[in-house]
Every structure is written in C-alpha cells, then in structure tokens.
Length: 492
Image (tube, rainbow, N blue to C red; front, side):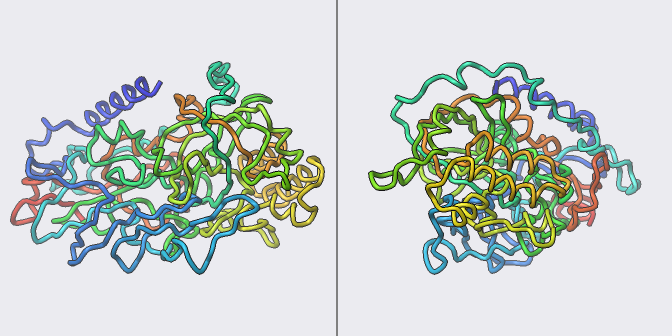
C-alpha cells in the first residue's frame, strides 16, 4: 500500500513540476525556477542552521514532547530537551517540574520548521528542488502558482473504505511484545508536520526521494480546522537568500490563534465494535513518523499488581484491536508505549486546545490525564465502568458540544464508549501496513513535494478552504539577477 502511495506521490510531483514549468523553460535568466545549482546542497531543516545575520540558530526541531510538539529555544543553541518529559502518562503519572527534561522554552518562533538560515555573504544557498514557473523579472505580478489547497476534496466516510483487512483483528496476544497507552490532546502542530533532516524519527526532507520515502509531512490546520501548509518559504527570504520554515505552532507564543493546530479529523474513530483507528505519539527510539501499529488489548493496565488489580474498564476493553499511526514523536515515550491522541485526554504542558476551543468555564480536567483523571478524582478509582463513561461524556459535551468541532466531540465520546474509559491499558503490539483511512488523514495535501514557493504568513487564521496561496518569485543558483554572484534568492 505504501509503495503504491509513493508511486502516486511521485506522479503528482512530476505533474506539479511540469505544470509549474519544467527546467527546460528556465532558459530565461529571470524565470521562477528551482533555486538550485550543482554547487547547492542545503537541507530543509533539522541540522544547525547558519543565520544570515551570523551565529548558529541551533536545531529548531529537537526535543519533542510527549504531546507531540517540539518547542524551539529562542535563545539558540541545542534544544535536545523534552519539554513534556513524563507528560501524558494518563491519570496516574505527573511530570516533575523541577527536574528531568522540562527546561526548554516552548515559545520561540525562530526556525520552527527547520528554516535554512544561509549566510547571504557566502556559503551554499538555495534549495535543491524548488518548483519552477514561467514568471519573468519584468513580470513581477506574474500569475502565481495555484495552491493545491484550492483543489482539496472532502474525505471519504469511514464506511466507504470497505471491510478492513483481517490482519488488523488477528490474535497477537501471545507474540510477547507488550506495551501500554497513555493519552493526550494538546492540539499543537504535530511533530511530524515539521521539516527536518530525519532526526528523532521524523521525515527526512533533504531530498525529494527521502521526503516521499518518509511519508512527506503530517497535515496541520488553522484555528478553524482548515488545512494549511506545513512549511513555506522562510519569513526572511531576500534577493540573495532562500530557505524554508515550518508554519508557526499554535503552542508557541508567536503562534496562538494565528498559528497551526492538529487537524481535528485526526481524532480516534471506530471502524466497528472490535476495531478502531487513531494517531499516537510514538517513541523516537523505535519508530518514525508515518509508521502504523496493531494493538490488541489484554484487559490489564500499566501499574497493575496484586494490590492494584485491573479495573472493570480495562476488562471491558480486553480483546479489542486498534491500528495507530505515528504523527508525533516523544523522547519520554517508552518502547512499546503509544501516547494516544484523544480529545479530552489532557492538554499537557503546551496547550493550544483552549485557544482553539475558547469557551468560558470549560473544565479541561487534569493537564496530564484529562477528563478521566478528573472523573477518577470525583468518583474514586474502583467505581463502575458506567460511572466513568458517563462522567467523561458529560465533560465531553460541556467542552465540545457547542464548540463547532464535531470531530473533537466524536473522538471524546469514542474514549468513553469504545475505549471504555480505560486508564493506561496494556496490550500486545506489532507493526503493520497503514490503513488508507489513516494515510488519507495524515499525509499533507498541500506540501506534496519537498519544495514550494509559498509566501510566509504570520497569521493563518483567515485562510479559508479554496483560497489560493500567495507565492514568491525566486531564482535558482547562478541565475539570480539581483545578486552579484548569482546566488539563489527570492524577491522579498
């Protein structure tokens, strides 16, 4: 399935490049073309980025938290710090605010998507694969590239995908591979929506081949749940500098309501009473973005012991199956653990949910554990399953019932009704091919290639479905009339 998908994307890439004007149309020195030459070899993000103003910016994408989002450090340097260490472990584990890996500043807007900060006075500049256009220098108001976002169609209903493969519900209870679920929904830009050089399990965007092989980038949406680019040209592109930058995370101080969020249709969904699909933050040590796993619940939970037996909720979940796809990576997520993305599961350390769903008096429950942890504190830890289910659903309705985000309400109710309000349940697991439903809701429909000439925007909140994305006129290395050395660059 993935091989077929990659062929499809490569075909789309080829068509896109032809439509944007192929390399053969770039004989005009002023053509909008791939800002690339034989001497250019820069990656789209991840490694330390040279700053046009001097100094090193550090890795903008290091340090994923368990809620999925990597928060860059505005002070520069290395950010190999997990700002959510110990987070989202469910209702029973709380992070240590005084220690561990929680010292990263989450509020930097600098280089959030791995922007290539290239020294305009020297060194290699330009991206090897930016698309071409027939616009000329004399026609700076040339027709822009049409945004692929304007052609986005609606997703199919879950029923339209047909019967799931038998592999997804086969018995794996004796395979010896054990793990457990924690939970969260911080609504931040997904970790896998950032561009990188493949570090921390993320997609490698250094080449078109690696970008497609790594499943491109995960979709992200604006505050109104409209899909927007995962990355664009950097905010500082100029006549002698070219680079990319991830769209600003809503969980950063610079983002907020103007930034980007998790698309709400990534909330869990039931296929039938015995099978569901969902997205997770996985351990960077043993998974990568875009991988899928089959979990079969065993009726127990992480901290079960002779004095702490499995609850009625865990026993009710026993035997059910779920296929999860990695859309976030967490340093503190253990091997075999998958941090389940479920609305109402806890906003964690970097909360964009309360920005997106802004209602007076909303009770989001415990920061780590969410609605269920709040319900446990009210009703004890050994109450009936139905008590927890009803309590969680009441909180779901209060938070999402009139919020205008039906996917969040659906996913929240799913936790109570299908998942049985189970706290940190355990399972057997194995890697599997991804179902088309999860692929469709994961893969960006805008950044289908590793290159673009989309203009940087500080505010995505006004972008509407079908709007054409603004583009910028750029030149490849050796053909830039604005730079004495012909280095790749763009009109500001």
